[in-house]
Image (cartoon, rainbow, N blue to C red; front, top):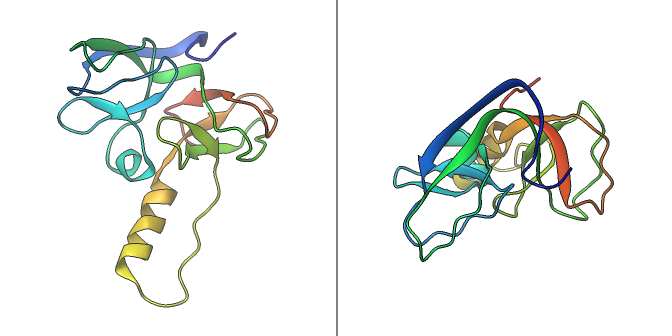
Length: 150
């Protein structure tokens, strides 16, 4: 299997979405519709919108619509050296837009700072699925059940 692949057809939901103008998207990237079209998902966007996986690549110079998995067993992009995930672990959007990493619960700040608290809320809301296979720290893809949070 490779990044951007569907692993099982059970629970599979696929839809077509427009890509935001002047935006490139790689196959297997996690994406969110920011209101103007699809862009690579970030923690803040995943907290506000539904993270999906791009089944096709899109080049910025070409206006496009692409198919995306909304719910399903997929192999998505993962950030290397961002932690090993075990089967059953929650996964979240990483600091690298469009990629997942093992979920790490945000901690409350020692002093009140609204921006820090909001960033931590967004981080906790950025869980996008569950690992369906163990993944090494150095791996660049993650087998997961996207759209189902345990």
